[in-house]
Length: 361
Ligand code: ATP
Ligand code: MG
Image 1 (cartoon, protein in one colour):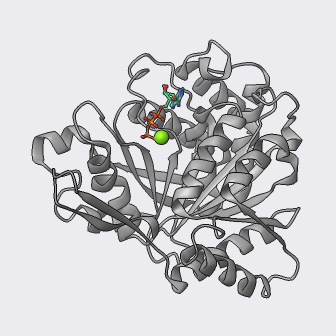
Image 2: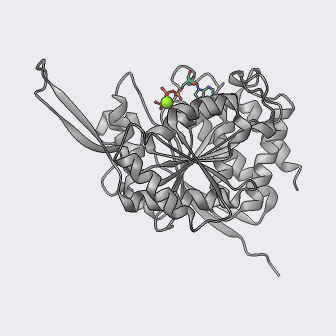
């Protein structure tokens, strides 16, 4: 019998800066994996939506673009932002947030760990001490785009940025966070808020967390204020497993997490629609990094880990784990880019990972 080969239709949006460099590397690694394992293949469709398109047409996404995107199984995204030419809030809302909002990707998953062979800036931190997943609410909160400005230019000008929290929105992210914590060996969830100072939305978070925790008796939940959480991440990384926090708080905590793990160049992120009615989007956590664009030194590891997260979401758990294992083996052998203290170029890391994958055959 001929084994059935699953084909996944993937939209790739490399966009700006080092985005195209790391997405190319990611596609090479994914194709090598599918050729080696043989049980699935990818059909990539490339979308050249970027800040360049915006400068030419005034739009990041052409008319009908989101309908096209909806047909894919997943979206593999590079980085958006061209701060010299386009204000960051326009590029971010024009492309990334437009996709997240349209496809109800309300759960943003950000795993972090110290890889074998890489060094955390913390004095005592082995790979076993730092292995976290941050669950970021990705659809409301401080980034809901609610607010406005009045009396522009006057000395009495005011601006409001309203954080929106709906019971529906908080319940669905909380349930997703408990499910994530439950699947992990330690079954430990830390709820991060600022409910001593922000007495409406953050108190709703506390209340909903208590309610949902009743559905998950196996999961241990503890609570931290976000300021205290930053200290705990630095001083007691081994006490943490899964974290759930708002859009803003988790955005900040996940940059800290990435730095503690050694570099922003290794951290992946998934923007998920857990209902699976829409495609989910997978991207490295880092930005377009124009300071290193075109030099061939971008760390592709974040994109490889991103690819592994995408595989897991598509149901290819085993391939996902194998890919991550190959990446970690390469790091352990010291084949790493400058941000991790090495001297390898993007292409050298990519080829080393592909060679490691081929050994799986
Ligand atoms: P954004 O606003 O999109 O988050 P940013 O301005 O915060 O972008 P990044 O583009 O993420 O910043 O870059 C922050 C720093 O990290 C830069 O010095 C950049 O060179 C470095 N950096 C980011 N990604 C990588 C990578 N993949 N490999 C090596 N260095 C990276
Ligand atoms: Mg940033």
